[in-house]
Length: 336
View (cartoon, rainbow, N blue to C red):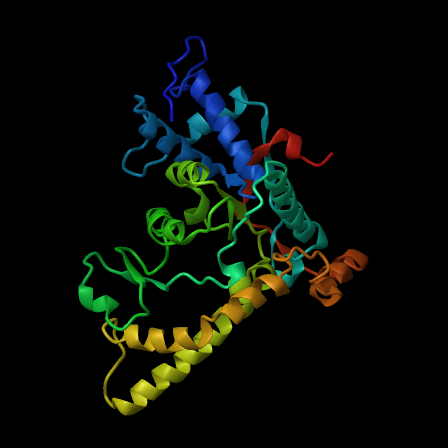
């Protein structure tokens, strides 16, 4: 990323400089258009990463790696092309948030991306799972020190990542997975990588820059729709968890008085993986979600039954306001 010189007279708190703030605004709008709207905290973290990557002097919080809220307020005043949109509240059921509008919006993003690549004569739009090519398993363990024994027995080519705080994915781990697992296996031509909206999947400038350099388009699923739109949710996770429970129960029965630790996970994961990580399941996942081949009519009317009922009878659903769920978006995205 090219470093722009700071511009004079841009107002207090504009430590990035006018030209760099323009780049940051464009970046935020591009992410929103790809289905990754950022909330206030994500923008502040993004500004910190922006300043660090460009080697700019700043007064942001280096310990927490985040820009201050006063900077954010000034930033929003300086950039009226951005606005705040409050997300719909969290409902009692995910189904209450599954709307035809959100699903069609995602299909529009996907269709436009495919059309755009086709017009550029990029006919080979690769989606790894949709063609039955399944990457090796990836396991995240809580801890700092990686041991070779943690990988024993896992499917061939599997990776183990360590997270000091928890067994969940982080931005750093996801970037490593993208570079070390996804990129070596992507097909030639333009690829589309479909993600949920977890912050680790979209909050890294390094990830977005690397994806652009590798001709990979990142698309985000709408909130609360993964149970019907995420291929892994619809075709893989449930049978894998079932097979893993069966395998784990058999191991415990054969080893009375012992517990399963991370040293025994590899063979158990491998047995369940080989039974469920099949080309048929991968292809079916994309087909049943209408992602590949693209089919807007895949989801049944009963998927939207709760929302349809609420629209007819507003008192049928009670919505709990979401805390801190406001998103920063391009003003042109606001509904009239």
